[in-house]
Length: 112
Image (cartoon, rainbow, N blue to C red; front, side):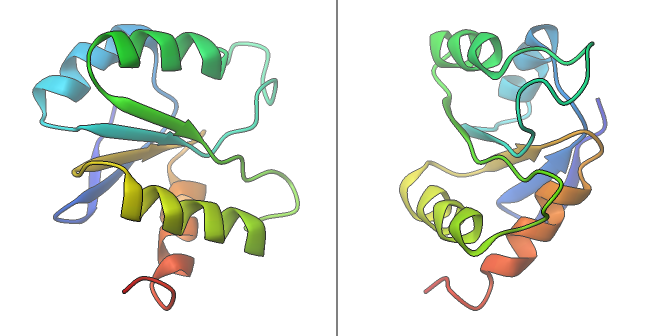
């Protein structure tokens, strides 16, 4: 797992697993947003499994899928809501971290 800071309160990573959650929590993250649609790859853990385990550890979790169509206006609005409503610091993840970075950058003009 490669945690890459984008801002002091938002970092990105490639695909995480349930086994990564203890390290994510220990790194201080209070919320996680998944930007990967379920079923994108055969070896990808289902979002529901990650969500259940993370919530049991006290972290808030949402899924805002960014699929082949790229970052949509609907996804950007959902990400703005997540940033405003969920505790910080926040970790966004997808296959490589690129979509999690892109959607965050698209929110800049809508936040505050």
